[in-house]
Image 1 (tube, rainbow, N blue to C red):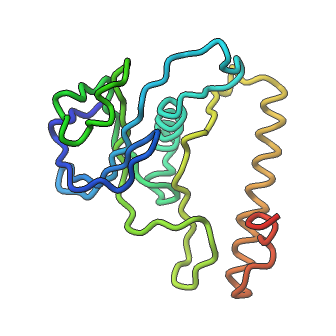
Image 2 (cartoon, rainbow, N blue to C red):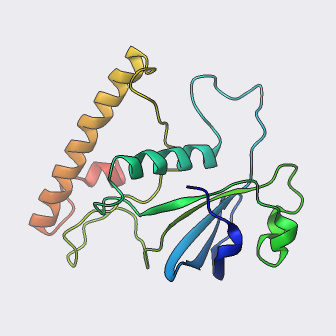
Length: 184
């Protein structure tokens, strides 16, 4: 879903970085996060077998997560839509970091989660929320190569281990089963 930037109210800059700049915003009466990305020009040094544009990685991941119902189930931040080809001159009071870019920035609009933390065992919550997909590689079932399918199966097994280990650590009240994930 494409969103018109003029329907979004900027509240505050949360974080400024090379890419993205993250803003707390309001849209349709909801607190949201707007992640604005510097557009990347393709380079001959880019790998041919993976996407390196952070906006494309994250927007494709959220689009698929939303399509498959994971946003609605609360496993990931809700994804509201995309803002493409932003003219930073029109929004220079907020997007002045993008004025010298050769290509217009793009953005994703997400559910605002107050005080997000890195994945860790927390006594006050029974849920795990995944929040960052800026390096995610997405594929369709009919175009994925056998090697990629094998890697995805290995990743699935690893994630199942991590989920079970997080549950065990929560039950035990200490980081034990996931220690290597944090410090290894």
